[in-house]
Amino acid sequence: MVKRKIVKIDEEKCNGCGLCIPRCAEGALRIINGKAKLVSETYCDGLGACLGKCPQDAITIEEREAQEFNAETSSINNESPYEVRREDSSSLFPTPVQIKSPQPVSQQWPVQLALVSPGASFLENADILLVADCVPFVVADFHAKFMRKYIVLVACPKLDNFQEHRERLTAIIRQSKIKSITVLHMEVPCCSGLTQLAKQAIASNNKDIPLRDITIKIDGTII
Image (tube, rainbow, N blue to C red):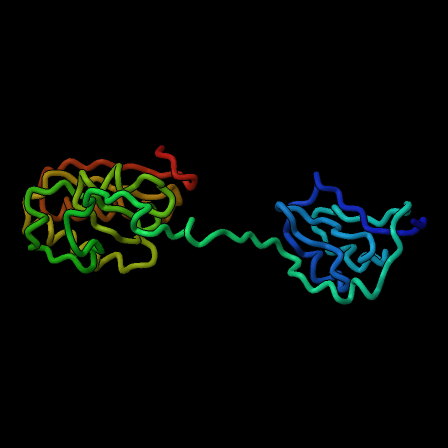
C-alpha cells in the first residue's frame, strides 16, 4: 500500500449515466448496480482523465492509502465496463411444458384498425376497445383485463394516418351495430387524439353510442 492519488466516486450523486467510462483508458471504472464503481485500485492511475465528464460532479480525486497502480494489469483489463446481466434462457423463454395453456383471449383477427374490414362479422353488436398501440406494453394484465371483454381495434393517433383511421371507424359504426366504444390511451398529450377520433366517427353517424375514455399512466396504472 502506498499513499497516492486515486479516484473517488460519490454514489449519492452518481446516476449511472456512464459518461465517465470511455474516458478511463485503464478500465478502472464499471457500471455496477446502476452506479459507477472503481473495480480495482491497481487499475486507476490517479491522473483524473475521467474528471469533468460527470454531469453530476460525482467523481473527484483524493489522496489516500491505496494499492499501487499496475499498468500491466490495467492494460489487459478487457471486460465490458457496463453491467451485463446473464440469465438462463429457459427462464426468459419457458418451454411449453412450463406454461399452462391459457384460455383464448382474442375474439378476432386482425386487430389493427387499418386492417379490420368494416363489415367483419365479429364487429356485429360488439363492445369495441379502441386502444393505443403502446398500451399493451405498459399494462401488465392487459389481456386478462380487456381483451376478453371487447373487440380490440389498435391504432396510434400520432404515427398513423388520423383521417384514414377516422374514416375506417366511421364505416365500422355505419355498417355494424356497435354497442359501445371504450378508448384506452396513454397519458401523453398526443395519445388523447384517439378519443377525438372516436368522437368524430360517432358524430359522423349521428348515433347514440356510449363512449368511455380511459387514460393509462406511463407506469401502467389507470387514471
